[in-house]
Length: 269
Image (cartoon, rainbow, N blue to C red; front, side, top):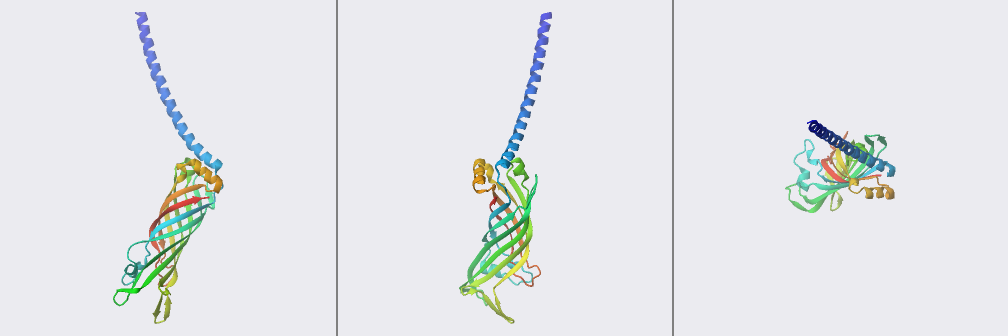
């Protein structure tokens, strides 16, 4: 009986010991996994900081559907732009160069940026008396320029390896435009003289977007590109912008701005 009780006690202790040992093992493994993930993210950021060349600028290649807000002029009769060129948006392509002047540790960068874009629309001109098609072609060229402050919040990408970088922009814009026909720049005769179909419009420019860092797809290639040509990061981005070229301090400006979205590639170097 004594030996039987002893064996039962030993068996119960062994089971309790096994349960305790199993629990400790699970806890130890969970801790090791968490520590491993933290070290992996830390080592990724550390490796990037070790091999990365100095970073001061960002360059964007931009593509955007564009419909100027000419027909939204208050007091305008009819829709001359839509009547002439239709409702289909045109493609605006351009670029932007940002100077990342100030680096805020564990947050992001802020600095000035300059952007320029170009678009063109053309169609057969219509007669004013009845709206019928004429034998001439009419066109409109728009150069969209802006100067903005840019804030990029890249802490997730730089510190944790999460490849998303949100950003915002805000500043002033300028639209240069030219209306043309088969004879060159269009002209119209008024009571005060001849008016040439060209000019400029001031306004504001604001935007917000999200960039996806493509470097995580192939870290070795990203490292090689940084070392050979100095490109620190490559992004695919999408943004929505308000180009409000409504004529700051101007009388009767041509509203050539647009509210639209753009996407493209960006490079930091």
